[in-house]
Length: 156
Image (cartoon, rainbow, N blue to C red; front, side, top):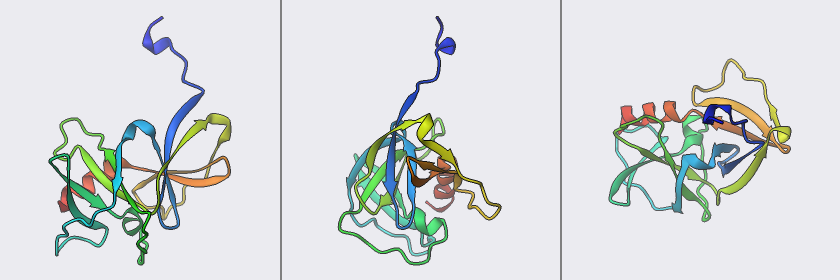
């Protein structure tokens, strides 16, 4: 049996990332690491959602506040906040990782098809949102990591 003949798994592992007022759902494989929050070195002319860069494994890691990119004006800091380091999707990307600030410790979830419910996509939805869904009664959004990578590349 070839790889293409394999049925889709009935369960996927994901990561729920808490933002202020939102949750992100990403596949577990998209998350490289979760680190303690450290203040990034900012850029004076950068948009408010781009916090700057921090050193991670001898790399210059861009750090973003996704809430601000999605249009929230005020975002409170938290003592539990972390930086979730995500893989970007482009082969040979100039920045193969991007850091997303979470307001708490991300948690692993098992995603079963029967626990997912799609939410309607509104016309005014931000380009960063691929989909909105409910997983076991909790609302979450799936971000467009390609769009995030593109916007970070324009700023950084």
